[in-house]
Length: 256
Ligand code: PGA
Image 1: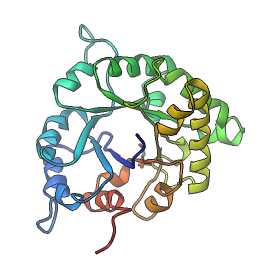
Image 2: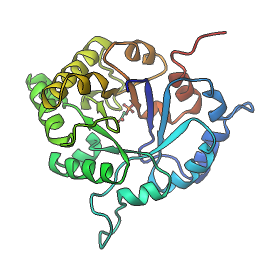
Image 3: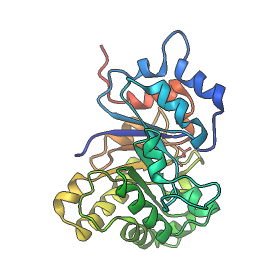
Image 4: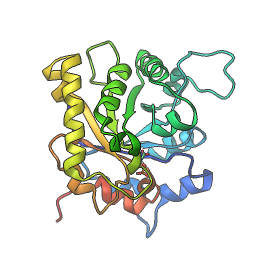
């Protein structure tokens, strides 16, 4: 079911004390209180080490917790890895899979992404699958092929995508301050919907949640998220600051 979703990707940021500071907030208003009235779905994806604390701070709130990665094997001798079922056991609901930083620095291929997506879905963990082109690919005019290839090879074979989200994150816009224009981001997301339609059917394509990511800030969130095909955002840098992230979450809150 389409709805607006705002997911914060903290990446490798925030130690124990900083997580507490984020949730306790300033001026006596906790982060959870500052977004309490929102109808949007809010997800926070902290580093693994901060998950338990984030689950504790968000208990009883409307915030969902996600991880930034998982491994596709269930358990065993895979030093340093965390399985999808371990995340479920830690009260994690979502997992970001195939983020461009994982693809770039940790050699995650489309095939690995697809293994992880299937492993997550198998245990009821909801994947947020990231796709997006590099600046070079965009300049060479091959961005559509790149995105199509990523979407086709990452989406699961099951036709029920109600537990799957896709995040379109053009790599040239991540952490650079360069945001895709709302029109360009909407075009790319519309294109992704057309691939989903071709892979499954019209209803699946109309229902699947597709987020935009790449330098989303409080100042540009509204213009992006009000576009018809954009269902919200995957927010990196701007999700680290509780005041700015609350402003992004509240982009469509009616003023009283
Ligand atoms: P950014 O990161 O908002 O800092 O550009 C987005 C992301 O990588 O998910």
